[in-house]
Image 1: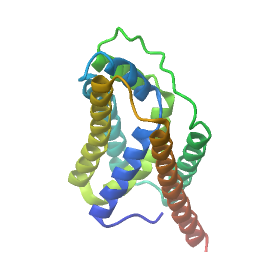
Image 2: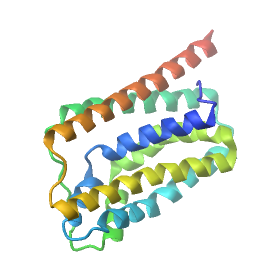
Image 3: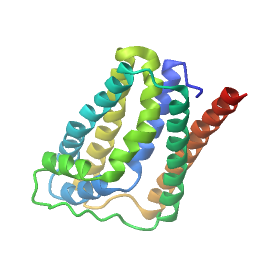
Image 4: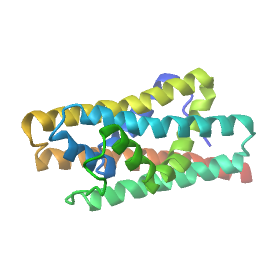
Amino acid sequence: MEYITDFYLFLASVMLISLSGVLMPGPLFAITLKKAAKSKLAGALIAVGHGIVEFPLMFLIFFIISQFKIPSILQIAVGLVGGFLMILMGIQTFRKRHKNEESQVNLKRDSVLAGVYTTAANAGFILWWLTIGTTLILNAQLFGFVGFSVFAGVHWLCDFSWYTVAALVIFKSQRFLSDRVKIGITIFCVAVFIGFGSYFMGSSLWSLISTVI
């Protein structure tokens, strides 16, 4: 699989993918919308709860990958699956662009606990890290533990920044973005996911062909 070998270019791709992922409607964003109406700190606290689950998972995947020599064919498979899921996620998001995501989380929960519970109970979150996330971690591994740590921090800060700002806007105005703006954000996210998904799949297919030949 062909990796992005320039660290700053890699971080830029991480920011784009991370922001696109967090901007897409989902259970965590849904609970943020509801709790932010009563607390301007809800978004930040929910992001902290999200990080309590996400950081250990990121480091666990990194250390597992670091302890074993991952066969190139497995890396290619992860890239293919991750790229395909990114494209699929983009297509599904575009199809559901007019629908509002509902959250089943109890609104009486503390915001941090709501972030923990909503993240841990989201099967899509685990699947994302086992495929798309693992593809990014394989790339981050090229820059060593420090590079990976920076990657992990940047990824979570994208989550933290978005949920914090979104909650503040909702708390201040008691409304969120107009439908036109939300559609624009959705189309941007779809383009990023389909673009990077195509890149990951294309580079993985090229590596597979090179391996076979």
